[in-house]
Length: 122
Image (cartoon, rainbow, N blue to C red):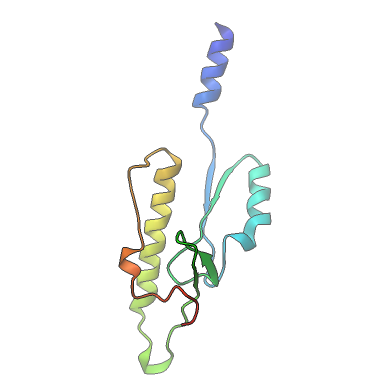
C-alpha cells in the first residue's frame, strides 16, 4: 500500500513549466541549448515556433516554411501589424499551455493568415 501511495504521489506531482517564446527574427531552435539547460534543472520546457511572420524561418504543418516579414519603412509603416503579431503569439502561447495540461479540444489554424506569403519569396 505504501508503494501505491508513492506511485500516486509521483503521478500527481506538479512539474515546473517554462514556455519559451523567441524574440523578433528568432527561432526556438537557436535557443535549444538554453532550453536544454533549463530542462536539466528539472523544468518542463516548451519552445514555441511562432507562425506570425516574426521568426527568421519556421516550418509550417503543410511542409512549407514561413520567413520573416519585413515591415515597410517611412509613411507605409503600420504599427498595428506588430500588435497583430503579439495577438497571434498570445494565441499560440495559450494554445500550447492548454495542450500541455491536457485540453486538446482547442484548435488554432492559419486560416486568418491567408495573406501571408509562405513560400519565402516575399
